[in-house]
Image (cartoon, rainbow, N blue to C red; front, side, top):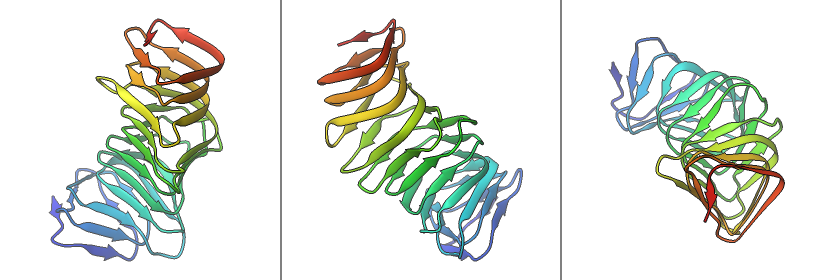
Length: 231
C-alpha cells in the first residue's frame, strides 16, 4: 500500500499495477496525463484529471475511488472502468467507449457524458445532472441505475437511448427541476420509483412487486407492460 501524504500533481501518466493499493489519504492527485488502474485506489480524496495539452484517457480493470474531470480537453474511456466512489464532471466531455463502466457512488454532471457505443454494460448509482450537464446518447446504449435520477436547472438527456433499468434497493425517485422529463428509449422498473410530474418514454415496463408512483402525467409512446402497479 502506498499512502499519499499530501495533494500533488502528476505531470505524465499514472499507472497502478495489479495487487497495488494507492491510498489517497483524503488528498487530491491531479493528473495531467492518462490513468491505468489494475490495482486499487482507496480513500476519501480524488484523482482529478486537469491540465495537460490533450484529451486524457482512463482505463483499468482494477478499482478507482473518486474521479473528477475539470479540463476542456476532456477524457476518453479506453478500456473497462470500475469506480467504487463518485464520478464528477466539472468541465470537459467524458466519452464512454464500447467497454464496460461501473460506478457505485454518485455521478454528478456539470458538463457532458457521451454514450458512443451500444456495447459494454453501463452501471450507475445515483445520477445528478445539473445546469450545464448533459447525458448525450450518440448510440442507443443501455444502462442500469441502482439509485435515483435527478435533473436540476437546465440539466438534460439527449439522443435516443437504449433501455434504462431502474433498480434501487428499497425504491427510488426520478425528479426534474422543470417537473418534465423525456427519455427517448425504454425504461424498466425492477423496484418501486416515484416519477416527476410529467414523464414521457417510448416503452415502460414495471416488474413484479414494483410500484410506480405517478405524480402527474405519464406518456408511453409505444408499449406499457409488466406485472407491477401504478399508484
